Length: 535
Image (cartoon, rainbow, N blue to C red):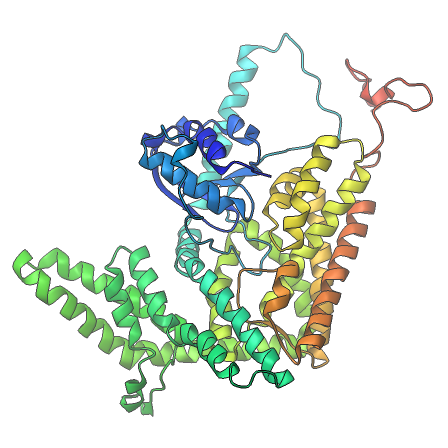
C-alpha cells in the first residue's frame, strides 16, 4: 500500500524521463496515464521496482503505471504538483485534494484493461528458471535484444489498427462520464429502495430528480467530450448534441414521423458531435479570420444540427432500439448460453481492447431501460479471475513473492478491479488466465439461467463490478436481484478456483524445490545440463 503519494510520485518522475518528457497526465480508477515525448527514456525495470507499483502498461497512446484504486488519484495529484514545480518539489509541495476524478475502466468489466503490451510488476514462474552461465556471448545478447525490439514493434503495430484506435477514442469519450453514472446510479438505487419501503415520501422525489437529471442531459456531455476527442471546439459539440434532448424536437417531423426528445440517445449525440467537428474543421480551413469568428460556429450548429434532426436522430434511434431489443432477447431466450459465452470471452476481449465497444451499448441500455443487463453477466469474468488467483495462492505456497502479490491484489479483485491480478498473476503464468475464463463462463451461465427464468439482473451504472456492484443492482426487486448476482459471483469463484487448482498449473507446481526426505534438490531442479530426452 502506498503511504506517501508524494514520495511515490517523486520516485516515478525521473524514471519516466523527467518533467520535460511528460506531455500529459491523467488517471483512471487504477492507472496513472502519461503522455511521453520519448518512450526510450523510460526505465521499465526500475519503475516496476517502485514500492506500490503493480505493473506498467503501454497501449501506444499512453504509458500507464498501475497503482490500484484509491491511491492513484493521490499519486496523480502529487505527480502533477511535481511537474508544476519543475520536478523539484518536496513533501511540502503536496497538492491539496485528490486530484482528478477517477474514471472507471471497462465496466463491468474486471477493471478494464486496454489492448496493450503489459509488463507485470511481478512476473513469477512456476517452472524452475533456466540456468544462466557466465560465458553467455555478446552475440546472443544482441540477438535477444533485436528479437525483443522486433516483438515490441509488431505488438505496437497491432495495437495501432484503425479499429482499436477508434475504440480507444470511444472509451476516452465515455470513461470520463463514469463517476457521474456511478453517483447517479447509487442515488437512484436509494430512491428506489425508499419508494419500495414507503419511507421518507417527501424525500424520494428529490432523490429521483437528482439521479435522473444527468441522464436527461447526458447527450450534451457526450457531445462535449466527442468534439474534444476529435479536435473540435467542445462547447460546439455540446451545442449540436443538445438538440437530441431538447423538448422542442417533438414538433419536428423526419421520414413522416414526429421526433421524440432523446431519440437516438448517446449514439445520436456521438454522431452529431463527430459531424459537427468535421464541419467546424472544414470551415476553419477555408474562412478568413474576420469571418471565421462569426460564420464557423454558425455553420457548425446549423449544418450539423439540421442533419442531426432530419437524419441522425432517426437512424440512431432505430439502432438504439435494436440494441435494447437484442439485449433483452439474448438473455431471456438464450440466457444460459449467452451468459456462458459473454462471461467466458470478456477477459480475452479486454486483452484485445475490444471491450471498449461495449461502453456506448451499456450507456444506451441505461438510458433506455434504466439499467444494463449485460454488465452483471460480464462482471462474472472478474469472479473467475479471483477464483483462479486464490488457487494459485494455495498451490504455489512456496512462492512467497507471488503470494505477496496475490494478497495485495485480491481485495481490489473482489471489488471488481482485476488489473493487478491479471497483469501480476494470471497472464504471466499463462494457463490460469484460461481457467479464469472458465470461471467467468460458469458465473455468466448462472446469471443468464435466471434471466431465462424471469429474474432480470441489471446495473444502473457502469464502472464498478465484483462486490462494488451490489449498490447499483436493479431488476425484479433488489433482494432477489442481489441473490442471483451473489450466486453468480460464488459460482465464478468456485469454478475458477477448481479449474485452476486441478488444470491451471503444471504437474509438480507448488512442491518445494528440495526433496523433503533427502533435503537435496530434485534431479530435475539440479543445476547443470539435463540428460537428453530419449528419442
